Length: 402
Image 1: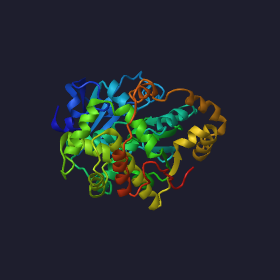
Image 2: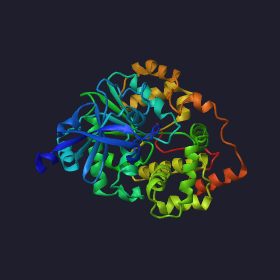
Image 3: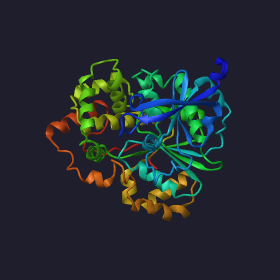
Image 4: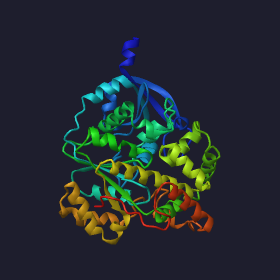
C-alpha cells in the first residue's frame, strides 16, 4: 500500500477496555490493536458513530449491526451505551472525513434540540418522544465529552472563547451532519444534547441550521442538586475527583484529569467568571456544592443566548409532574406532533426512565441524601449570587416558557 493510498483509508482497531466501569470512553481506558485498513466508506455504515474530531483525525466507534443502540428504552443514555457496546475504533484522516460531510444534505431534517440541566426529566422526554411514530431519538452522545475533554490534541479550558471560532463551528456542523446521516429519511429527530459543554453549540445551530427548534428542560437548583447528590454523591471516585479539582482550582492551565474535571463541572465557562465565583463562595469539594457550578453555568449560558435573540423555549420539570397531559400536548403542538399521540406518550411516565443505570430511582432512593447545614447553604448562595442567579431556596423562572 502506498502512502497516498493509506491516507485515503480508515484504520480499524479492535477495542479492549483497560479501565472497566467508566461512563465514557477515554484514551486511557482503551487498549487498541490494529485489525485492518478499510476504505473510507466504512465510517458510513449505520452501526458506526462519530466519537471525536481532532486536528488530523476523525475517530469512530463501531457496534454490532444488530444492536438497536438508539432505542432509549433499552439505552437511555447513548454515551453509556457507546462505551458498553463499542467493538472497534476506526480512525480516518480528518480531511477525508470533512470532504465526506460536505456531501451530506440535512436541510429537510426536522430536528428538535433538548438541552438540559441534569436531573430534570430530560431522559423521560426522550422516552416520551420515542412513543411517537416517525421520530428518531439521539440521547447524549460521546462526542463532546471525548472531543473537548479527552482528545489528545485538544488542550483548551476556556470553551466560551473557543466556541466563537470558525474551527469550533466546523466541528459542530460536521458532528451534526454525521449523526443526522444515521436517521431514516423522513424521520424527525429529538436530539437530547449532552449535559457537558454542548450548550456552546447553540449559536452554531441557530446560524447553520436555522430550522432546528431549541428547547431547554430545567428544574430549580435545590431539588436538582438533591437528586444529583443522591445518585452521584456517595461514589468514592467522584468524591476524590472533586477534591482533586478543587486542589488545582488556582491553576490557569490545568492538565490531564484536573483539566477534564474542570471542563466537566464548569462546562468550559469563562474562567474569569466561573472560577472566581467558586473561590469567592469557598465551595467545598462535594457533589452537592459542585452541582451549583454545573447548573449555574448552563443556566447563565442559556440566559445569555436568549438575551442575544436566540429563541429557546423552556420547559420546567414541575410542569410535567403537575399536569403531564397538558404539558406534553403543548410540547407536541410546538414541534408539530399530533395530540393524538399524547395518551400513548403518557405511558412512558409509568416507568423509571433510567432503570438499570446508576441514576435510577431505585439507586437514588437508597441514599439518605444531602445534609443541610447553614454553612453549606451560605456557600451555595454565595456562588449563585456571584453568578447573578436566584438563591438556593428560590424559584428559577426562565424567559420564553412553553
